[in-house]
Amino acid sequence: MEIGAILCGKISGIIDYGAFVDCENGQRGMVHISEVANSYVENIREHLTMGQEVRVKVLNITPEGKISLSIKKALEPAQPAAASARPRPPRKPAGSPNVWQGGKPKREAPQNFEDMMSRFKQTSEENISTLRKSGDSRYNGGAKRRK
Image (cartoon, rainbow, N blue to C red):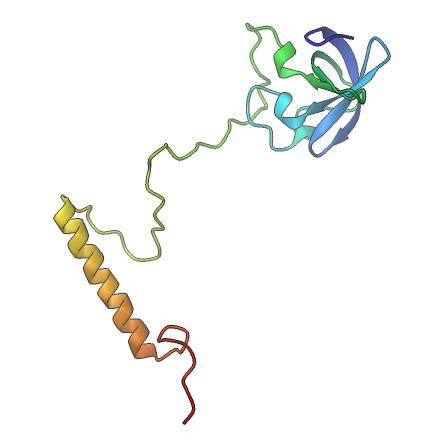
């Protein structure tokens, strides 16, 4: 067996993070869940079943003899991914602010920097005032001293 070879095999075991494949040459390797399909796989059992015949590509062989396999890299380019595969959930675009929206009703977006600063200062002052009124020792300098 060599890295890059494409082989046929049968699924001989399924675990949450991958599947074991008995290859035609008598050796056993593992397909990690990320190598099952071209789309996001949340539950591997929705894509593979025991005894299912699959084509796999050999990705790596460790010095200990562990064989890493890939089903998705053995797919021919013209062959689409499984129809039952769910697309990966969308990610937040790079550079988008990590802002908690909270339970407050949404206001109109500020038009410029000065408006944003003004709103920030007002909200901050309201929060500090609320904390001071509550008298909670956690927010006003620690435990009160005894006389």
